[in-house]
Length: 247
Image 1 (spheres, rainbow, N blue to C red):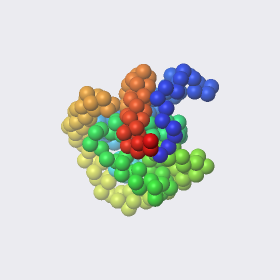
Image 2: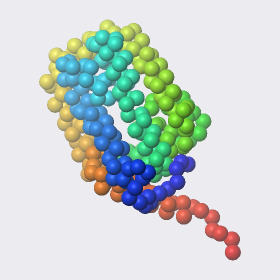
Image 3: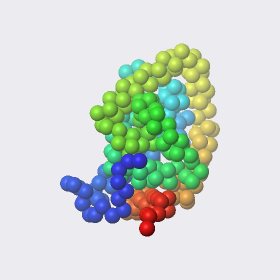
Image 4: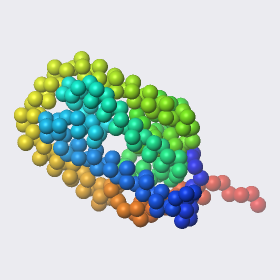
């Protein structure tokens, strides 16, 4: 689909060593994953005490709707737009650099039962631009890079689409302001009962992901090994499915 499958690209990649290149991808991806987990674990307390922090930590649509009535419009638009766009280039160039290997790595992290990558591969053939515009997240942006979408198309789509999406969320939350505020008040009143439950639930989910080697927080060496394993899997599959050469 995308870039050439590279199993051993050597010690240097252009101006950077392979380890430096992997670090530049791994650190922001792991940080984004960590912040998303923290927002899921502590969202009741954050909603009551520092709602703007939820916009910094997560691109979740539901949490954006909950936060909108509680913060100034300038804060909402600035953070809700900046958060996905900061990570979009990282995901795009990760896919651009490693192609199908990056997609296989993402697929492995989502788990063996996840079908989202396979489904999006089919949808991307027809709806690549709308998908990127609506949600330049890890899977969509990595796939955009892996499928060779040009940067001159990707980045304007990501920016304009994010602005439109955030505007629609703002208008929807504005129309639902009263029930959303009532819900936030309820959460704030019982946050010290709800937060331990959400924290425990996320802790169990993260623990299970780590046990199955699907956590995003790992060392550079582990990241390197996983990419090489993904490349080897793809190369093995290509060898098995390729037709035999005629005698």
